[in-house]
Image 1: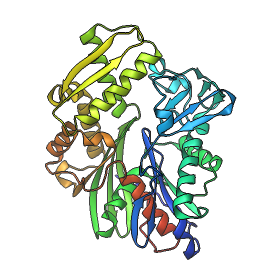
Image 2 (image 1 turned 45 degrees about the vertical axis):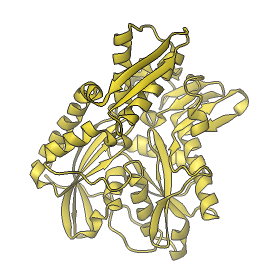
Image 3 (image 1 turned 60 degrees about the vertical axis):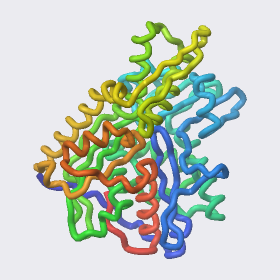
Image 4 (image 1 turned 30 degrees about the horizontal axis):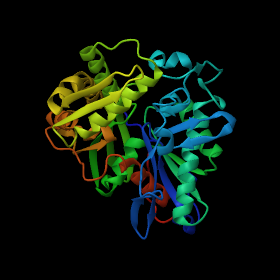
Length: 390
């Protein structure tokens, strides 16, 4: 098949601009901003020392809002007005959202793109995304002590023109000058320095909070080529949380849960999932609105059984991408893991079993995309020529 090469011209800037050019990962679950300084790339942290900004916005009557951790803390208390995983809705109509009925929001089928009815009025996914990007811009300008010259924003490879346009609109609303929209798999490859080799073929396995994407890239003569991609915009870490909640409901005979209890259990399920990446057992505890207390143990092995079908679905997508690229798993030189959900031991084991090799995991999977985007922003702003990037 003919490789797809995506480039963008006319992006060179004055050499001094790279000092305040940043890379942004506008993620489904978390977002972050990174920059290159003194030849080193790092994620920029908030005043509390946190690099990750929860991609959560809470709207209140009168126009008050909270972004990040403050909003996340209220998602169980005020689920109707606390918007999480909004990236999944960018550029989509209501009919495009397959699980809309299970979401704790008041969707409005507005022309062009679905909206959400909140205490502060009807908000589009662009409005919500702009608040997240604005918070990242403010953080970056505080850390870099000045106005930003521009930003490279990483987007999923599966984003269509409408979704890319929505991302640009959100960035402009946030006061950002967009240098480039960089495909997330290419950003991950750049972060690992795969563009420094003479040539190679790479698989980027990206399991984020709300979506899965597998991309097969070839690097040759300074150019990244997208040989094939596949994925599922409705399959991500959130799906594993829902599996845990479904298991809990069956185990405990729970039914007819309201928005508060649904969000509470999803939050506790996510905490349990994350704990099991390091521990072999954890407990899920919650107090439902009915006054019923929940305290249930969950082991890593039991969770692996719950996760098996979802992981198998990602492996099916990987095989399709390899077939579309005309390659075998053995033809892949390196595999890169992206997204916090790839910390799950069951995911890493499945990837290793398919490719017959351990994936690259030395970089934080939550930060790798922002790091690559920052390196690309640094290159585009004039510090070096850099590889052509999709």
